[in-house]
Amino acid sequence: MTFIKTISTFLITLLFVTTIFGQESKQKTKILLIGTIHFETPHLDTFELKTDDFLAPKRQKELEELTEVLKRTNADKVMIEKPLNQQKQIDSLYNAYSKNKYTLTVSEREQIGFRLAKKLNLKHINCIDIFYGMKHDSLVSVTAKEKNQLYLLKELGTTANNLKLEFDGVVKRNSITEVLKYINTKELLQKNLSLYLKYIAKIGAGENYIGAESVSDWYLRNLAIYANITNQINANDKYVILIFGQGHIPILKHLLQNNDDFEVVELNSVLK
Image (cartoon, rainbow, N blue to C red; front, side, top):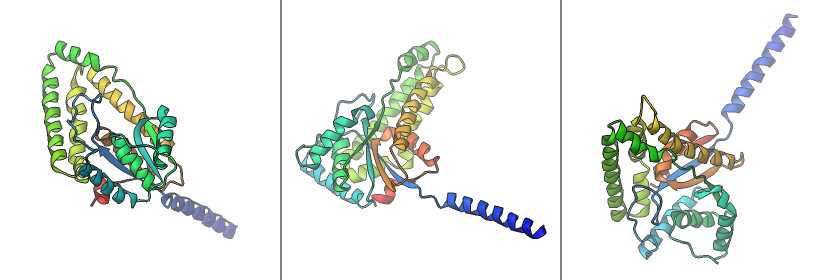
C-alpha cells in the first residue's frame, strides 16, 4: 500500500509540474505598437497637428526606409486604425494595391500599413477600430462652469497646445522614423494620457462625475479596440504590428501587457 501511495503521489506531482511547465512555455504572440501622428487633415481631434506633406519625395523615401526596417520582424499581421465594419472596403483597396492597381492616399494607415503589409507579402490587412462617441463631452464644459472648474479646461487647453507644438517641431526637424521613436517614448505616452486623467476626470467629482464619465468613454473605445485586436489574433500568430494614433497607445499597451498571451515589443528596440 505504501508503494502504491508513493507512485500515486509521484504521478500527481509529475502531472502538476508538467501542467505548470506547459503553461510557462506557451508561446506568446509578440505585438509591436506603433503610435503615429495622422498624416492627413482635417480629422476630428480637438488638438490637431499641422501635418507635413507626406507625399513629398523626401517623406516617401523615409517611409520606404521605415517599412524596410519593420519588414525584418516578419510579422504575421498588420493592424490599422480603420473601423471593423469597413473591412471589406479595405480588403478591396489593399488587394488592388498589392496588384499595383491602386495609388496610396496620404493616410498613415496606407502609407505605413498598406506599404508594410505588401512588403511582408500579407494577403490581408486587419481593421480593428470602433468608434464610440464621447457622449459626455458636451456636459463637461457645462459642469466645469457650474462647479467653478473652468480653470481645469484652461490648463488642459494650454498643456495640449504645448504638446501639439512640441510634436509639430519634432515632425518638421526629423525623419518619420525619428518622429515615431520620439512620440512612442514612455514620457510622451504618459503626457498624452495625462490630459484625460489630470484634468478631465476631476470635473464634477464628488457630485455628478461627468469628467470621469467622459474619460470612461475614451477607455471604452480603447477596450473595444483591444477586444478587436485579441479577437483577430490566433495561436499561430508569432508577431503582430499595430499602427494607431499615438493617443490610443498608452491604454492599449496597458491592456496588452496585462494579458499573458502577449509580449509587447518596445518600438525603440526595433527602430534602432
